Image 1 (cartoon, rainbow, N blue to C red):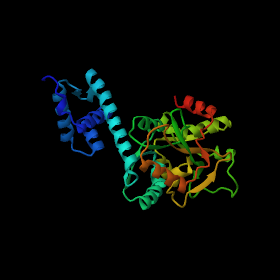
Image 2 (tube, rainbow, N blue to C red):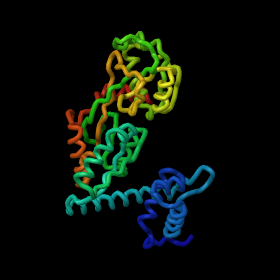
Image 3 (cartoon, one colour):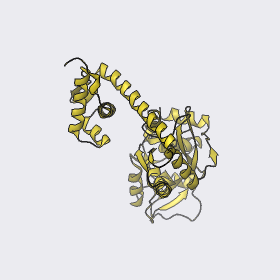
Image 4 (tube, helix red, strand yellow):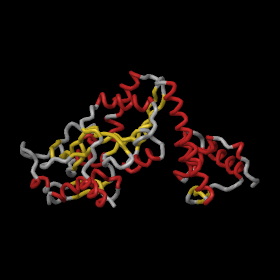
Length: 322
């Protein structure tokens, strides 16, 4: 491989480098960048040729960065972030005519809240594009914000250092019961709930934050959980409840759309998850991002500006999912 020639390096090659490094796979990187796999392969090969070094080792386990590849990737990320800053500076001087807002979301926000915001924003500013990017893990939303891959994020975790935002809403956890279950028309009690087989996600990782919060709530109140089915997806638990296999506890927003026959009850002692909108503190945001935030506030007026969950609650959750 010949000595490096930096003049031929293209931004598309740097984006390909970062994408492959993140997923360790050329095909997945191509999907992420919405290009063909051959385009990714060509971009990496051309970049390696220009630099005169091997950036990836290829094998059965995918594409892994070489030591020099790691260092080049870090510099490439810095260059792409600077390019993003340049774009934001230019947009600020031009005023708000268009732009893009990248939003990191989890499923229930993506399906139940975000579409209404996008429709309203599109009505006000037809040339602004909103791009939802879905994550299952709140930590990944924070990471995406730190790395500049999203502009705004939604999370259920407390607002941490380096971020600012506000509480969008409190989402109540509810108990879903089978359609044909015969029970008294009275509020659900802990004693009654303990008699039903429980369907619940495992709670073994940060992906199961809702399950962790539920288990913690039961434990703090000294209430047992009769877990009959340990599953992975909320939608699975709803389907199993519909077929009469047990009951489940989920945030109300995560249950929608809910089969009409399923019975819904509040917990004997209420539990809520706090859905918050966050962004990097002291960051330079484009007019399009501020337009998105203003539209969000119009639809969901913030009552508790930048209000984190208590540090005690945060520490308990962190220990539970460690």
